[in-house]
Length: 98
Image (cartoon, rainbow, N blue to C red; front, side, top):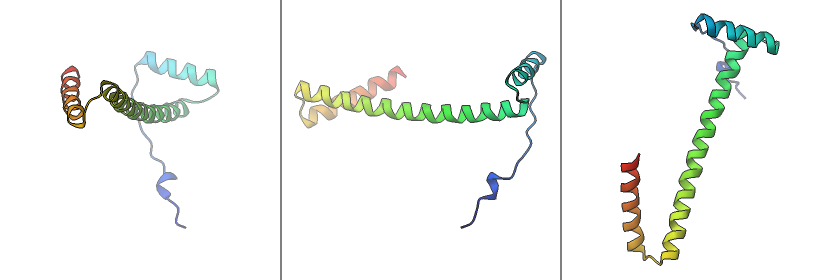
């Protein structure tokens, strides 16, 4: 099986910080027994994980909204046509609120 060499290849990235941020980065690296590069790499991984979590939460919110809508439609006794009209109206109102 072929391995992906892209994961093993490394590239350097240069970033500029204000003096205050740089000093705080150095202090945190020293406090954690790390170095600035390791902290920045960890921050990138945490950022990626947070983005994945945000995506999953958005998907969950969408599923919950659909389910609540279906429950409310059923309790209200809406026909399929009324449910579709209510859904279109709700989407329109939510679009205007965003």
